Image (cartoon, rainbow, N blue to C red; front, side):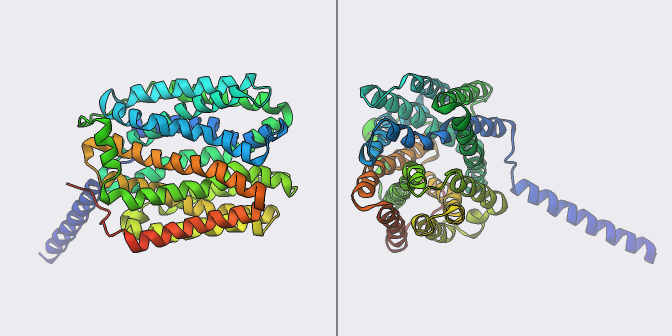
Length: 411
């Protein structure tokens, strides 16, 4: 009898453990679904076509452009993104995500093709950058809206962080690959490589199934009202500051590295991207586990520190260390801010909320590219990077003091 009682007790314990395990699995729905994986790969190919353009400022300098003009030309793409964002927000919730994804991919592919005919600084380069920005603007809003649709709401911050690994992984590999293509075949081969990857992104997008979503009918006026609602003001201001800081190194890191005779700008981008990938893979659930704001604050401080280090440690080791700090910060900031903004909206307006987030991100790049170019031209790179870090710290202080909203899903 004792033996039967012991066996029965062990069976009940095993059954209880099995039920708890099953319950735990039910509470953690899968992230790595078929469509999430395909979207990840499509975004990865897009990144391989996007990241090599960190070398475009040096290409423009070779044609005689000064830093202020380089910043203006690079910022033109963000202007296009700003102009198209309200329309794409309505299109995402209206005509559908997949239509926008393929349309944006084809426009981005055409822009990449157009760089092959650039032979100087003139109106055509501004037109190409506008086309580039239209395609990139549509794709960025659509990729992350689709990701937010596919990812279970309870794991949204973790899922967006994991999805963003594709962008950072393409940066870790795409920038060194672009540098290699430049060395063996010049800018013509670089642009052709980007064309190939842009085409692969479009082909992969064709295989993605669009999930059902309950869209709300919005006007342009309502879209603007959503963007200006009280609960999203501080996160959106922080998004602009985040992009302002990023513009300093996305646009001017390669000219800076050339000016201080560091042979490989990819030192920074490799450590930057790999650290962002590492933090998302090992700690991607921290925002959902510990709270979005609690992880956001040290991430902003890390990014600010990395930007300041760029100009104060002017050698390959310095670029690697600063890249690590910037990557650790970016690894959390982008998914956290996007999740906060999505969560403070209505699920039926998810496309519009993500579009508003990427719109304000482009506003930061659009302002930052020419502004930092003028600062670097007039006062030097060290002053420019120092001020960019200060902007990030100011946004951290404003979030701490001014944002009183809970970062949870709205009803």
